Image 1 (tube, rainbow, N blue to C red):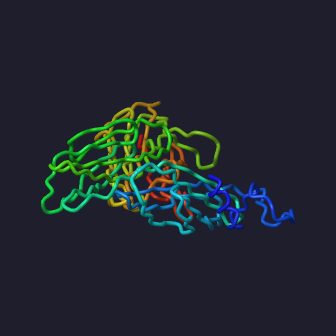
Image 2 (tube, rainbow, N blue to C red):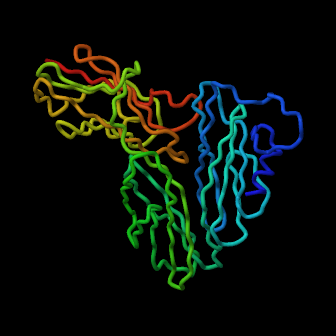
Image 3 (cartoon, rainbow, N blue to C red):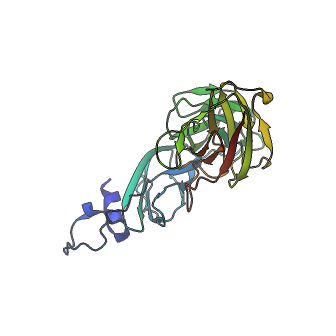
Length: 342
């Protein structure tokens, strides 16, 4: 850790007061009182000793961004100062990889995570790899491993990163039981008939469905309460996202998937809730939206729904699926109109 702190000190943009030394002591480079520090985070994908690291760090201040990246791979090699470095470890083992970031106001943030890598296989061996696809807390993992000529598949083992493992199955489905945005290291190990082993690890980020309807005016939670006996329709007004399987679901008083692939479903088409049957006065509709998967990207924020409107005029739900980037969260990934007709 000492090497990490020393490396951080040579990058003034990190603004780490703990570095000390050098005299001066003025206020130049101090963080403005209104600035919010960024949140450091990263994803990693490894095949044996070779890993690709991707910063998923975020800064929620309008107009601010991540300005500095500093990676310590925990193996004594020089630090890297790019956003998305690749790194090859010299030998198998578990290494603590640390990412430090700073925003344009020099406010710092760090995150450290243990990364386990395996030795590169010898010729005529397996080469583990897999893909991941998630909708909210439900993920499907597909083994895409390859085998050299002379290497024949014998077995596989999934480690979902939450103390649950599963042998053999492909594709493998898994449900994560978490209540907040959480990162898991998922590992696939394949073994050939000669006993040669290869593993591949990826970090995935999952989040529970967005269920709380936050009033857009900040006055608290909103409800979709029917003041009179009514029929209800839902219309996808627009979408501005690229996730597969962003799902919009009515969960009460009936269960119905309104839009199964919201970023790609047709807009402007009304969907009758409960086959057009009338709901009684006082019924409260419960809605949840489940974030899907964006290739080569991971969730940065908890998915959130905001709502405006009322029973008489209809409710407009604006959904942000939680994927980061410039201007995010922007609450325009899905825009849905819920209308009640007495």
